[in-house]
Every structure is written in C-alpha cells, then in structure tokens.
Image 1 (cartoon, rainbow, N blue to C red):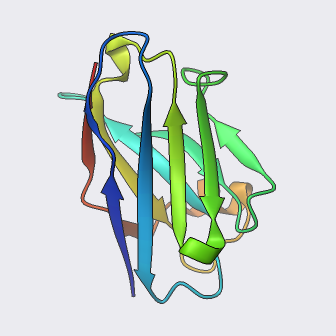
Image 2: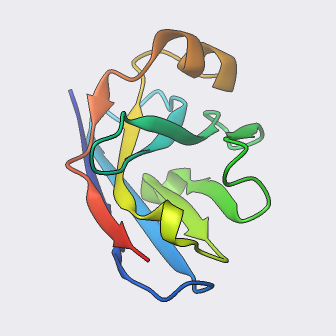
Length: 124
C-alpha cells in the first residue's frame, strides 16, 4: 500500500504562484510514475500533469502547459507541482496519484492511478 498526502494549497490572487507537495509513504519502492489531477465543483476530475519514475519524462494538460511544472525528489519521496500565473479557472481540489508498477508517463495515462491523496484546495 502507498499513502499520499498533499500540502501547499491555499488562496492566491490571479497571476500568483503556489507550490503543491505530495509526500508518499508506505511501499514507495520501486519508484513509479505519479501525477496530479484536479476537480472543480460540478466537473469531472481531470489530469493536470504526469511524471515518470525517474523524473526524466513529463506530460502536461494543454490548459496548464507553460505555467505549471511537475517535478519529484525521489530521495524525499516527494512530488511537486509549481503553479505560476494562476487563473480563476485553476480553482479546484488538487489530488496527487500514483500507479502500481507503472513507470512511464504513457503507462500511467493508459492504466490510471491506483492510489490517491486526500486532495488540497487551490482557490484563485
């Protein structure tokens, strides 16, 4: 089992920045691909960004490309989402997720996550 805990959400003005963190614990080896999702009120949960096991490959939704950066520090079992130039439409609950035995961005997107965090609210 893997436990994921997000932090770093909050209220920010349009054009501002936030950095979300996701701390993984439990069965964190081998490293797997991870991702960020978000869900706005009344809408479906959408993928935001994905990062491979090593951090060498990333994927971004078109809506955040150029503004958000996903990264990870495997030594700290932590994934990050740096969010810049925030817009009102970025308001949502943000979830981190991981996929059991999936190591690439493509595999993560094909199979979907197995583990979810509890979510952190971002309000712009």
